[in-house]
Length: 286
Image (cartoon, rainbow, N blue to C red; front, side):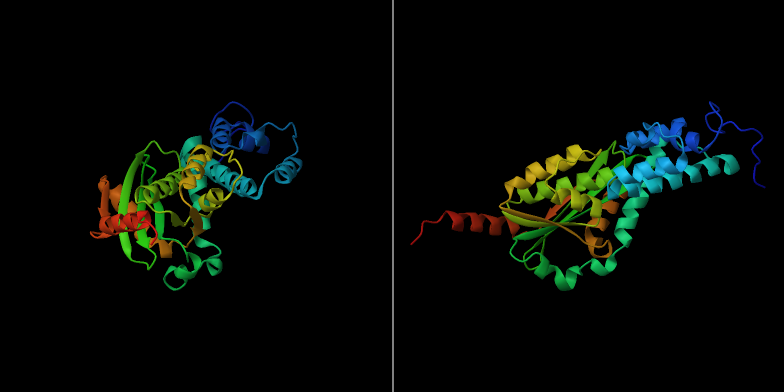
């Protein structure tokens, strides 16, 4: 049987009467969520009418900000109903993590017709680069731990190396995907490549890595690290692939998260090939 609200006060905070203004802009859970999502500006407006407020938000927000805003509104109302009818409580931090995870899942599943197949089309997409590094992330909500999975392949799609990294105190799946992208760049540098293609299944992270504008989101610091490190390469490309085609990196990440162990494996002849290439590059012209 569903519970019936016996008074008009907010059932979660009991600080004020519950209306749309309070649910979406004043309740402590709500304000914490907006802050973590880096959308505090939406609660700083003096507009009281709901529809005028929504119009104001959409007129001033980017496409990505509007996507996050819409998902947040839906989750806020859903979590409010869960509390009333099922007595399930959730913090603003956990609610924001769910919102970011949901958007990340949408990114992975939509627009598949625009996603190239790695097996058939990868050579055309990365033609001219020495290697490709696939990256993915795995996230544990309960323990707030995460892992990055990396797989490096050569110009002919041959396996070169695999690596996993365990992270702690990562706030969201988006942040973990960003850290995985940074680790992919660092792996390419450590392997000595001059030209590289980096592939991931988070459109948000890939788009941010490709832009030259300063990122002002909560991911900004990690994205700046990626942009600074990629200058090491003579040539670098960031490309989106579907999760289905990123299964190897996904497996590496989930295994590391499950076992709690990091690992690094490298193809036996790879160091010798790298050394040979470096020596060849240093030879004097005939």
